[in-house]
Image (cartoon, rainbow, N blue to C red):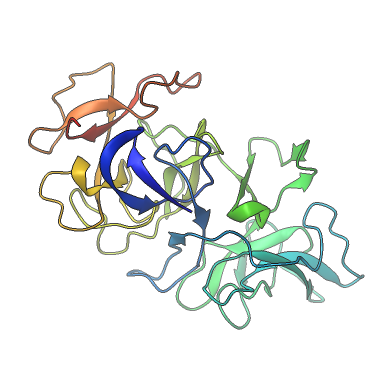
Length: 272
């Protein structure tokens, strides 16, 4: 879904974000499709799920020799529905390079049971990542990783958390808001390509460079599109340190209490 408004303030254009948002904050929407952006990485877009699932991603209840994997049932390039897909005889393991067969969100890849080919480039090549195990009530991931659920429950990925003020994500990834209430940040695909600098146009959460995020046009001076990239800022530092003329550092969480560890996370925005 697309989220209108930054920090609950009126006057901002709708900008699509990655993860479902309960409060209309600067998060929201879904992940996908993979590919077909400048630089050949994974943009993010909207989607509410593609229809009846053929299997259960949590239960992994497909027949032997197959796995339950998300795919693009709606034909819009977004992983929206689980289905059973074959697992090859010598599948790739977590962290291995991998390939996708067919369309970039087909769900058919070279990764083993419980894994998914992610961070895919324009040649359908990516890396195997672990999907969440357990249940929605008790998700499980390898040590050091967090279960991030998006796309209406059709995408379950074990990801690393991060701090947008001191990002430490692997090369090719950026620090993005995650969770239904944006109460943590995660490392995910950097789809900025040749763009993504301050003031560049954007419509997805992961098309701005590291240290930046996509905000509605009313927040960024001179922005002529639906949204433009602006900076994160540290609320404990000089509030006038933002690059844009007239911008100030506002809390990422608006008037709501910030989660522990993110009390100083702000965004550079024109006052509204």
